[in-house]
Amino acid sequence: VPKISGFIAPSITTFWNINPSYRVFEYSKDTFEILDYHQYHLDLEQSYATSKLVWVYAYSFKDRYSLNALRPGDLYALIKRFQEDDTLFQKWLASYYTGRPHSSCDFLCKRKMLCSLRASTYQDYLECLL
Image 1 (spheres, one colour):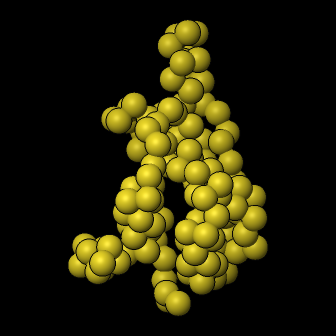
Image 2 (cartoon, one colour; image 1 turned 30 degrees about the vertical axis):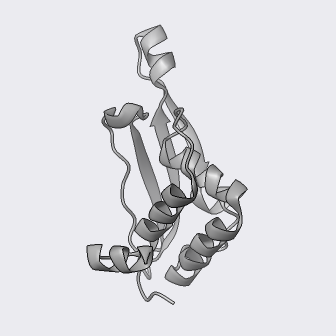
């Protein structure tokens, strides 16, 4: 079980045809433990249609994946759930693409995505793929 975890912030660019996104983290002021995060994204279609930036609340990470905490062990268990439950993995994948249409993710794609979530180094990633 991992001892630490990291969170990679989403992008506010439109590269790869994704909605620009940002996160607001909740944390304990006493322990600095991450308690949850809330994801927002820019709805590109609505923003283009109205010529105004339309930011949309997307989800609470804890609520979206039914988590009690975001400790390393909880996140590791979530990755295992992604591996076993393809519906849950597809839900995560839709979040990864910020709600924008994306191509399907076959077995190899899913394996690569899960390895990228597990690995902290490129070497770890390559070993995971074996």
